[in-house]
Image (cartoon, rainbow over all chains, first blue to last red; front, side, top):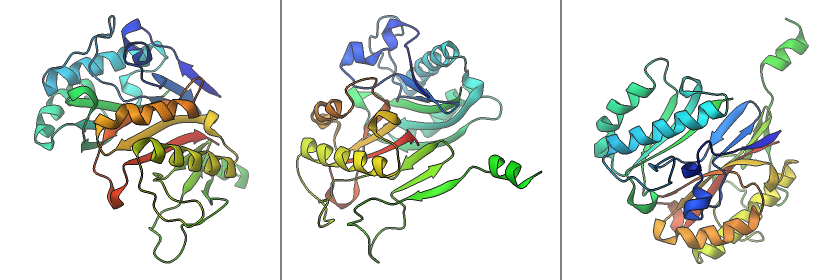
Length: 129
Length: 138
């Protein structure tokens, strides 16, 4: 069983706004695989560039919307790939990150990569459905 | 717990061999091309290689993407899966300036209900411009 998860709000559908050829998330085998999320306004899809903190906060809020609409939640995250533009921001990311996953945080890998459109943070997650 | 019960509790793990393993030999890196675990197939990152000689192909982002996704389709099929069963794709690309060149080819391989995807710019080994990995339903 492989289900495409429909965007819970129009702004989160990156296909519509930026021509990305990907589903927002796919449910399969009891898991939800999400596409890499960047900081966009959930209603308008407008890109919201900012600090690592503001971008990560926006991404977590969008993830919360997405996972809850799919019957999951931030508490059910299993694995996170946290991508940042520069390792020097590692502690800044962590400060915000721990607010959203205070208890039994998911497995995580942080890497510094080049993110699309000059963003500073991207989160790619797998959650239990 | 019965033997059958133990079998259910510990998921089966199985190595997937490509139909045409051109990249074998003692110099091959310590990885399997794919592993089936439970309901899923996890593939290693694939770079563009010549399917006959196993040599790396150095070409444009579009050409490498084409080569990689063709190999991916073949490998998934040898595991009893297919591109339509892919749930998540990670694309690594040497420069995000080439994102659209990758995307144009990519969309041809996943015409309907494309998988979830993450694409980012990273430094790749061996002079490759693109590397793609995926998770699919078995």
